[in-house]
Every structure is written in structure tokens, then in C-alpha cells.
Image (cartoon, one colour):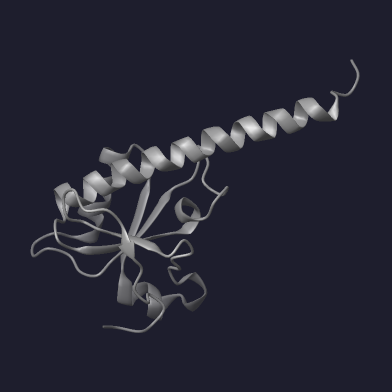
Length: 134
């Protein structure tokens, strides 16, 4: 069995990129709905592979930094709710905790977009998430 022609490999790569982009769009929609349902009105920044074109895949998790949590809700409980709604692991943290605990892993809004967890609201321009505590 010989090597596949280069054009077959290129077409497979193109197909995978297209499918990954569709998956990323669907995941963003599910996340937006889950945030609106569980933490309405809370500002949330999405970072990591979901906002980096061509980086989100079947095995990717979703990274979310929240401005605050509703009274009586733990971060772990919210993560389990979001993961169940989105259908994949959601890693959530509070904004100040990421900015101070792991400087190399600060959330970056590479697409210049963030989502506000208010039902029906589209993404708005991203605030500076690399600064320290609010």
C-alpha cells in the first residue's frame, strides 16, 4: 500500500477544519445559553482554544473566567452545570484568581469578544482580563 497523494491529505485537513469550526460555533451557542440559564447577568470571559481559530477540536475543553458567582453557588457546582449543558468539560475560574495565581495562563480574549450571561444578548467587546483584581 503506497502513500496517499498530497491532495487527499489536504482535503482531509480542510474537512476537519470545517467540522471543528462548526463544532466551535455550536459549543459557543450552548455555552452562551448555559451561562444565561445558570448565572444570568454575570460577566464571563471565554478564553483558550474556543476563541482561537483552528484550535478547538472534539477533545477540547471550554475555558471560562467569571467576574463573580451568585450567592450560594460554588465554582465546582457551576462547572458541573455548565459541563452538563455544553456536553464537554468546562473549566471555570474567577477572573481575579486566574490573573493572580497563574500569570502565564491569564485569559486572553484573542478574538476581542466576550459573552455576557444575559439571555439573548450577543457577545460584546472584551474588557481587559489581564489586569489584577477589580
